Length: 132
Length: 124
Picture (cartoon, rainbow over the protein chains, first blue to last red):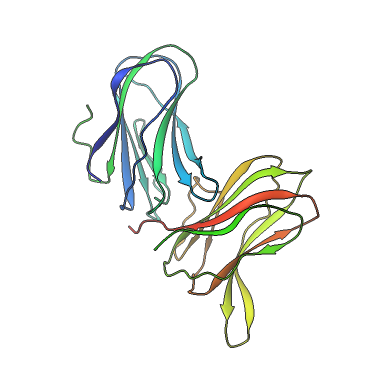
């Protein structure tokens, strides 16, 4: 999966889902660029459950919005080592990436205060080169 | 390989076994997706392998009993490595085999409606 912007840079006042995406990698990186401080936002990862014919949330976390370090990176990985947090804006999350099931991300807004951000996802590489 | 739907949506009040299925990967996500309950059912998911020599189903992974009070999705890892992410309900380290089934043991006769599926996960 090539780097893909699943939520383009724009102000948002309400919760939003990304389009579905697939990965054949053991690790994926999700990068979020926030440009202004705003309401509390929760990032979540969902996968499509064929048996239920519905999306199911597999992970969520409150997103640290920090204009001093505006790129927050989550690496979902299947390594057995125990690193969970590298810095306040660089997180490692132990997880299995489903091979056949579609995934999608969501950004859940707790309030209607607008927040500008973009979200990208890609198969794991050493670093995110850029987030639009 | 394709993901497997082992139990389609139905209400159960007693222990149920899936049909035998084949699996040729070392890891799997097992998803127990509960959509409705009556009272407080206790459900213990197990993975069993078939021993053709003895003709017995052998439990290789027994997960902790869950007690859903409403719609809830449980995810269980079965892995050949010690792997316990917080993103799943529980992980068991075990070897998966070509002939398996899933067993959902009920602690009482309270009803639970659920599906069970086995999902392939990516290698490192």
